[in-house]
Length: 253
Image 1: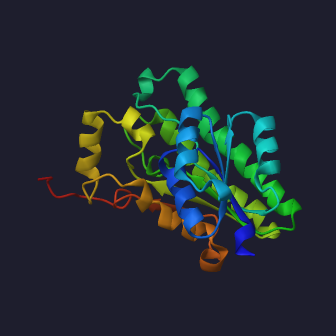
Image 2 (image 1 turned 180 degrees about the horizontal axis):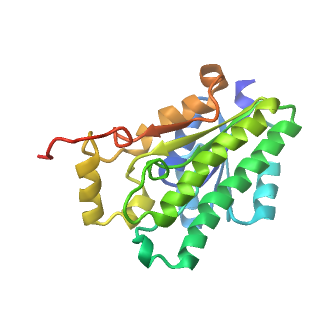
């Protein structure tokens, strides 16, 4: 039954993760939402259908906690999809980046993503196989950008992780892809993108604007739907207003 499909989402209480949860509910999924931000979780409880949503506070760098959450995320249903949308960022020049900050960003963005993907993949395999895992990366993992030594390195690692896991999970019928958004109007971007940074991004975006989270969700849901993307795995797909493919640009108005 379509109604027993469960989608587990880390970082699901705000931004892209929340938008994916809302879109998934509209397409008949049940959702299990995890987030470290308990205030955001409370807001998400008010935004999502409580009859078809479950919520949990979760630190994605805690291996035991991630494993335990995934073990119970599907409830009586089946874990058919997982999205790793939890992440952190900083805009610091490489030569000024403290190693502790570098390690912290990689711990959350890379190790946290790996723990979610591994736990979900194991659960799908042990339930008989099949399913889709979507890792939220970034165009900063595809192209270098100033101030992104830690963040860009972490997202490049996520892209490669999706490629490797796609190979290892294929025998179990599990697809793994990475979605690479450009700048999106999320709480994380609001904290990191100063007016100067926003102006720099807008100069290099052919579409000259940031995306809304809801503009990322159609590709996310497509990649999670085996009926529509069943032969698509190991890919890193940019939804970025043209940034990754841009060369010479006309002057901005």
